[in-house]
Length: 211
Image (cartoon, rainbow, N blue to C red; front, side):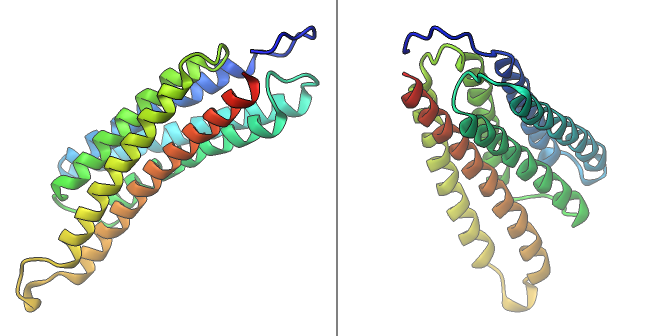
């Protein structure tokens, strides 16, 4: 890292760490939600919504600090971008939970559970990476890991689409509306995986600039 004579405000790092830990909590709850009986999902969705609200507050605190800080630890634009990208992940997780409950879905395909497991792994990796942001240590490994997880999520997503859109049923027995509801949830989970990759790429860009 380049030597700096001017001290910089380091209060952003704990906020990013808290935001990522909050996302990891939401991802774990989402995994519980998709595995739960339909009647138990509403309470879990409410807990995820509470975490999404907390995430919004953390994003607001980061942006407020950004507007009031003269010397930032890295580029102002990157601080804003990273905060926004983390918020995108949480929004997608909350949306997937909300749709699962709103659409009153029953048992979900096994691939949905796999999607959520991959999101949990990406969330854990992101939480660990935020704790290393201040020192910029081993962040390339984090980017590689999340990119690999997103590749796996893409594969699961494609398999799920094939399963949903070409069901092994007679046409008269196909629940088209039900398929479309599940497809929306599957697509939202894929959006969350993509959002994790965008966070990782943003962190990689910051590390390259600050190295």
